[in-house]
Length: 364
Ligand SMILES: C[S@@+](CC[C@H](N)C(=O)[O-])C[C@H]1O[C@@H](n2cnc3c(N)ncnc32)[C@H](O)[C@@H]1O
Image 1 (tube, protein in one colour):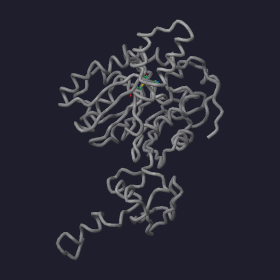
Image 2: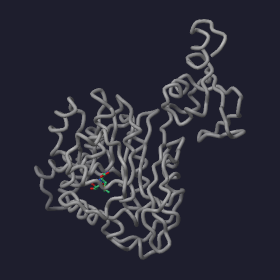
Image 3: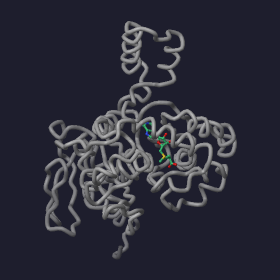
Image 4: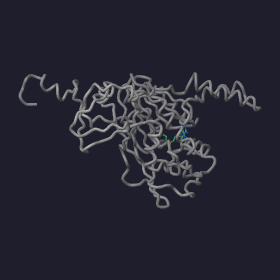
């Protein structure tokens, strides 16, 4: 996707850090977009974490037990502490944020929450979500030991950052079952947004998925909006145009993108541009299509006469199509964008084989 980058104000990142450091100290109502979460997971959360919620959706509800989940821009940690309960003792939750004050708030409750749930499966790491290779805590430790005063010191620091990305990455390649994020991706500078999606793809395990709640807009904001620092840090100016939001996933290699939630009423309307929350799910394919054998059969359930997926395969309603064993298993497990659309018909399908095995009754 070639896209002209909008002219924005220079120092977005510092403005974002300043605003959310304040938001970590005092509740800032204007930063919230009303969201309802499942109360049963909020019950054991500290009130301070619930109050300092700057999200716009609830991507946590798409986690399943055992998932390793990465939360991009974890803020006060609310989504991570909800996820901790959802993924259980066998799962793991990693929150990443670049804001020391937010990280301190989230980390403050680690022990208390581990005691309440009965296991410790959450950690918060410092880094930029558009560069999930660089562990800021390690990079800062290097800087402390080797303060930079001259250009050659800077060069050594850059070499060390490259080594860290290679040998001790903040997030390992192919290590995450589910990436979530709640109202953060819009805050990344326009020129870094594609790197962000590419790094999300890198860290997602094959067959894994990303569920992202973020602010989208129905048309491109004008220069006044783009030049306003308050609107940048307030999740407005950096909002994705809704069609481009989906394109960004595709451009990074994700497939099966699906709009799970699109807020009906806009959250805000400025200069006739509507801003609202949207939640999108996308999948990292299990293997390249050329490496797949097609020994398992599925039937496309409809309602369309034909449907073509992001890999260019066309499924015709009611007809059998061959897919790989791995993909077939993902459909059976509900871990595929195609689950619910393709009916597995090649063994292992409880609705077809279970009936006959269950005692010879004439009716099912
Ligand atoms: C709108 S708040 C959302 C916080 C949290 N997800 C929630 O639901 O309450 C944005 C958070 O993302 C962090 N953030 C923004 N840009 C970031 C970046 N490029 N890398 C890492 N964290 C970032 C901010 O520090 C802040 O904590």
